[in-house]
Image (cartoon, rainbow, N blue to C red):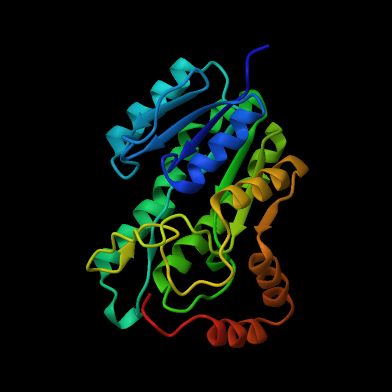
Length: 256
């Protein structure tokens, strides 16, 4: 029997690599999609493909190649994303749209490509959201909006795909330290994920991947990953007003 196959967008980043390592340790074959794969080496159980997920032609070519070279796809992890830190008054429409192209529309396009392969395998869509996907987060208006949209899409897709035996799961990690000190922040505030300096109780990528994959195996529809994420999930559900006060008190008023 051939090894199960997982496809991970944003696969060359810290969390993508952590997912890859954890899955490969359990006998999976992993295909990583990312714009820059220069630091990732191919191996018998890992393949890296260059792809700018916001470029429709590159997306079409990369997904077609993955499907052609792998007769079975069991898991797709929608992990690619960027953050945007700053006040709304300084946010341009162009930056807002760019954030959605990366964090939302790229994932939806990828999901369309792998819809049939996952139906055939009765596999899993796993969307990587954030605490900002179910709650407000200071100086993250566009980021929170993109993650809310991501969760809205995949939680709705869950109902459609259930009859095909496909699971649709969402993970919401709290602050994952993947790029502290390497924000590569642009003038519009868009920066590499995991680079915020105003976060609370950071997790390592390995810790986050372990918790998320454990939740995936349990079949949990929503997987809050990390102490902050779990507390945020419950407090926000019980008292959104209390959550907002606590969030404003604990998140720095700096611009990150």
